[in-house]
Length: 237
Image (cartoon, rainbow, N blue to C red; front, side, top):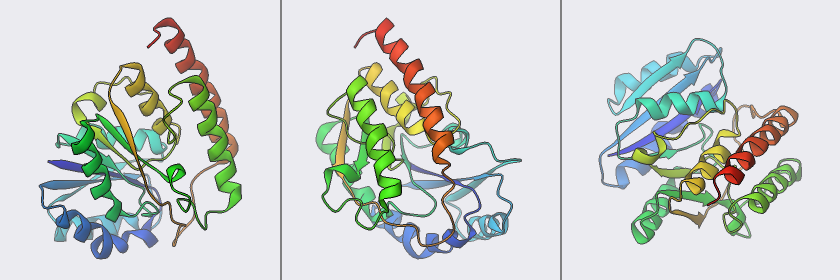
């Protein structure tokens, strides 16, 4: 079974797209699946929309944090709740459109990888329309991770991925913010798991606002990089 983990914080505007765009794409994969929605302390109308979706679609399961804890915490809640042998992660705003999930699954079948990441950096139009104010910090952070860890892996920070649940659930994840995606990728590499990438497109957000605080996340990445670099130096791959 495939588990789709989607962290959500004040995403009521995006949730209307789930029935029209997410669920049909999952049904087209023609395999058992579940959708794990993690409400990370939303204060908009998301809770009511979650309940409505779950009542109409038994494959949707909802978990709620009493207060906002961050993307990393929401993902860890979703990982713990998932039942599938494979776990895919998506943004609630569907900026990585779920129609691209089949590319992740095909790459895993082709390579036998334990982690398959969707990389907008492998595609010339992968971030077309995304403002440079968002692109540039992302390019810089990913370049730092490549320089310190696996240089051929381009997508340390994007969320759009497919994981072997058996490996993912045994990682000692600590991150609470957006840096969790980089932590997961590095820990798969440190444990010598097979990783692969496919080119995908990152679209611009249609509804709502980004929850990314650039200065806070840059600090969290800096701290994570120092911790992971110490680990990799103590236990070289």
